[in-house]
Length: 368
Ligand code: GLY
Ligand code: MN
Image: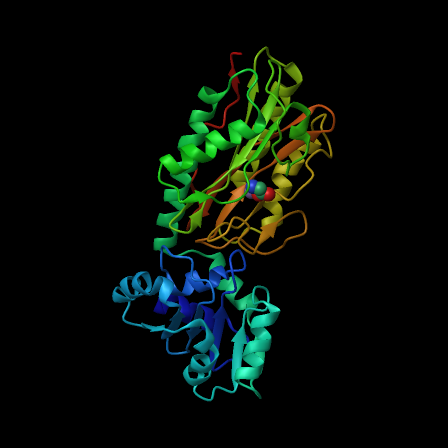
C-alpha cells in the first residue's frame, strides 16, 4: 500500500527514518497495521509493519498467517513479507530498521510491553509519536476503503430493513441483538463492528445501553444501534422503532430527530467546520420541547474501527474534507421514558456527501 505509506509520511510534522506499527494480542491489534498492509483476513497477533519513506513496507508475520500475508503481498510489489517465529521478531526489527536513528511509533496504540521490547532491541533510537499523522492520514479514505465501507453499510442497511420483521412480543433485547448479528453474518459480515445496542422502552434513554433479558412489550419504543465488519471495514447505523400502539410523544420525538438529522446533512460539504454540522442538529432539538436532550456529539469518523480516531461536537472546528467517512447521529434521550437516535454513515464528496447507509429513516411503527 505504497500510497498509504506515503500519505502518512506526508502528514508528518518532522521527518522520521521509518515508522514501526506493532500488534500485541487481540484485541490490542493496531488497525494501522491493516491500513498499511491492506490484508483483508487473518488475525496477525504479534505482527509488525515497518514503513519506509520511499513507500516500501516490511511486514513481519508469524507462520500462523504466512499464507494469507503472501497472497496479499502478491498484489503489492512494495510489500516484503518476512515469516518470523515470535521470539525472533525483535532481532528482525533491528535488522530491518538498518540503523534508523529516528523512528515513528503509534503511541496511541502501541502497548507498553512492545515499547520496552523495541527499546531493548534497538537502544539509542529516538522514538517519536506519530499517532496524529497516522490518524490524519486514516481519516480521509481512498477509493478502495470507500468500496469496503459501502460493503459494510449495505449489510447494515439490509439488517436495518429486516428489524421490523424480527420483532415479537416477549423477545428479549439480547435475543433481538443476537438475531441482528446473525443476519449481518448471513449477509456477508465477518462479525459485528461493536457490541450491538438494543434498548427497549426507557432503556433507550441511555445512548450506550447494553442489551439485557428485558422483554419487548406492546407500547415500547426501541433504539437499535449496530454495525457490520466487512473485510475489516465497518458501518455504524442506528434505527429507532415503535412496537404496538402509537405513543404520540415518541412519534413527535422521532419527527424531531429526523428533522435534526436532515438539518445536519444539509450543512455537509468540504471546508465546513464540523461543529456546524453538530450545531445544525442541536438547533432543531434545542428549539423543540426536548431542549438539551441531545447528550453527545453528532458524529465520528468510521473506517477500520467504529470510532476511527476523530469525532465532532459543538467545539470541533476541524473542517470537513473530501473523502472523510463519518456518522451523522443526532438523538433525543428522555430519562425514564426512552430515546430516539437515527444514525447514518456518509462520505464527504467534492460538492457535498453521499450516503453509505440506505435503510429507511422514517418512523416505523410495527404492529404488536
Ligand atoms: N455506535 C455507537 C456510537 O457511535 O457511539
Ligand atoms: Mn456511531
